[in-house]
Length: 491
Image (cartoon, rainbow, N blue to C red; front, side):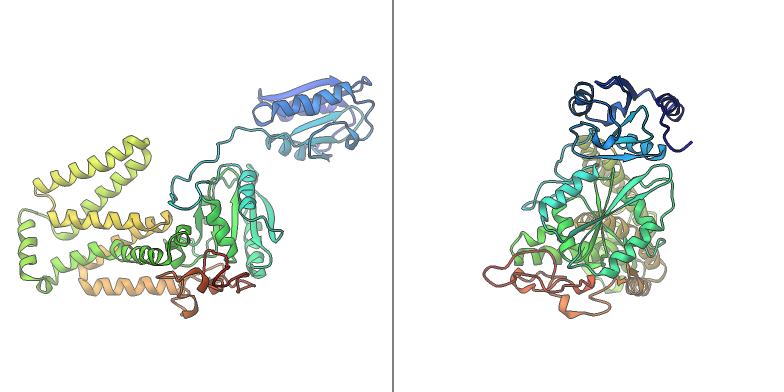
């Protein structure tokens, strides 16, 4: 029996059958002023009890005469709707609403009285900033939408909501600026969201597995952010954003490889400082991937290219080491990754202590025991520091894994193995597409017009157009001039 009955007793029996063993479900029978019987249903921990008492029960008991149509019920809740089947009643109750059922009416009045526990807005943990905003997204989708509207109070901001999940009905909100975004991009994303058939989507990380063009590729194809100002900056570039209820991160696409090395802070600093920091990130990219492999290839195959004094220093450092360079490097890299993971999982102060003390103790003990050389400890430390400079966590994690195949190739073929691996990596980036956008643009395919905001950042008054990599419908930024132009993210 899916539809509500006109008999209050039958409806009560259905409620008890549907929600058996749910002690937190409140079934509140009462009588209207006209002695008409009614039921109020809600889950205790998901509603605002003051709203239930003052805006629902009090006017119904003290003011309501005979109710023939639920739309005329004298409740003072801001938003209400009527439903006629139990599936909608069930979904509404589980999302923090309350349901009013009146004897003689085969409908239920759903009132929006949500009041579940939620975290206060605080500074993001993974995207710290110096000059930018210190507000971060939370686990409530409605609050995250409000944060974006606070930064972007514009009627062109459009929202499309999708309910995904058979067992857990998660609300996923698609946001975009209708006058800027490419309409084909919105249609493509809507098609992919509608094609998801799964029990539940609980986080943006799970959602990306269903949206990626290349699900077996190690490189991230969507960017996540915890900062509303960063999400708005991407929207202004012509991208789209996805808000998953219950998740404190927002998914942004389409992205390119170089966009993972740009931050909102770049547009808060002076352009020369921002350009230096951005160039530093690309240097860190090269060190993260190639430095251990380069060291292994020099020691194992090409030691003749080293200066004589440096070669003596390395030879003296490795005199007591019984392992080849590849084994030495793998041991230290795995030890660093274990320390990094331990520092993340332990409580804050303990994790920092483990990371610092553990790294010093293990490195010093390994050198004194003759297991690794001093030079290898320096190489691994520089590689770890470089990976921390990369601003996007997903990209940094992927690059840390990519360096292991390069180390193996260097131990087998020397510099030739590194060159071949580099060509394969570049070819992979060039062949990838995300939401029908080339992943390597504007480097491959080449588009020099966007180079003013890649390796360096030109002054904002010179960035008159949005990135062409997003295929935005409106390329030119509005209000751009030397004296009174607006600042923003992009090129």
